[in-house]
Image (cartoon, rainbow, N blue to C red; front, side, top):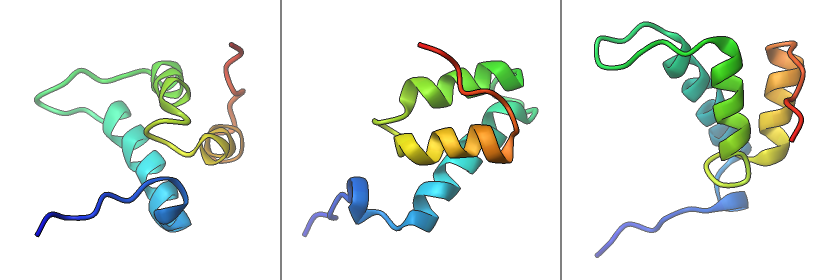
Length: 74
């Protein structure tokens, strides 16, 4: 039997928050297999993937409240 794929509100809010924080940390930390993103590049990636990979509202809150950065304009 295949695994169910959770989408949108089926994913717990805690899981959605962790996904954003983990992605930001992964992008901005030194890794042997990928380049380090600047904070601005990582924020742009989060914004570009908000509404798809990341919860749009939580992504903006993460950038503005946790990182204390401005949400990029369109």
